[in-house]
Image (cartoon, rainbow over all chains, first blue to last red; front, side):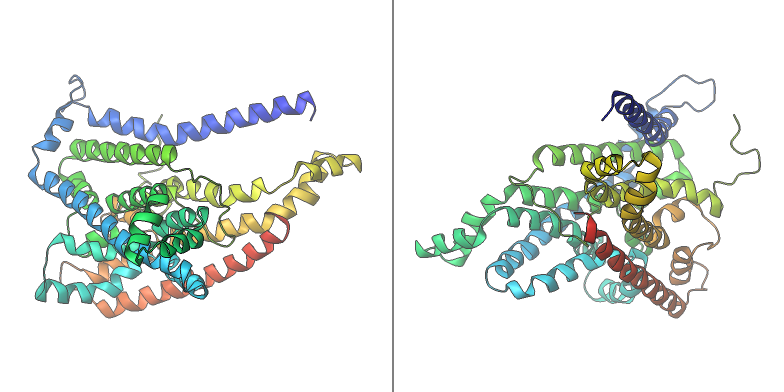
Length: 277
Length: 149
């Protein structure tokens, strides 16, 4: 490659980086600027909006509800997916395409469509079982399936599950020991990834909670935006920062030991998991 | 600088477009970058040894190779924007100017105008449209993987 062309390429790269960086960072900076504004235009900078977060009971309740949902969803996802995927890999490999299709389906079905179908079920559940916000964990479990599946799949593909399982079995381990003490420790990074992605999805969820009349973090932000805009923006910045931190953790620990090429034909918008659409 | 010289457009249909780009650009990058990675430098060298310039390379080699991946990504973005709800709901408080808002409003009307039947019908239309898009996407994806990857 000639020197001239390399220089041109470098300039192009820097230009794209600067333009897109500004495009994505300026609004976040503007949000932070707005959240520190005083009441009038001449008023000095103040952190009042940030301090008010802790004094808004509705908001605190919503934050804790979202965190509880994130934990419940992650646990449920692990309980459901890890044994299923190990079992399918070891004993039922012909089912792997079916499982994959089922797990990736929620990516393509719009959340709003899910709500239209789920509304009657939740109406019944509210009346007969519980109207706690924590029941949302059931839907969120479905929502996080694609992301968790891809993360766990990468982890499982990187280790030789069959050999590990046969070795453990021949030494007298039962299936519980094989899964919990042999395979799971070998895919701990993938499990961490799946959990972080699930947390990001759950904390960013708005559509389903809003339409089923539950107040989670994002719904609280949207409601508050109509009453007290600066506080609402402050919470939004805080939740964005939290998601960034999660993704940074993910990018540090998230590398599988051996690189596994994602199968063609499957979109993996892992990073777009966070935040409502 | 006044961005509202022609009226406050942010809360209208055209206001949604710039806001949607904030979740569309990352998705396109994630979908399209693997295709770019599949381009081999040897192809460029082959073009040059046959006397072709930059224009020939992009017009006859890289362009056609990347086209299926690009249109596949575009289809995915279409489905994504079509099914988005949260952004529009947070931005627009009144009226149902897009399908997802209309579903939401017919599902949970606060003034007794709820008609879950209409919401379900609209949701079904959405599912059918998204299914068509995904089938087309799979076809294009298969075409992409013929040369790239």
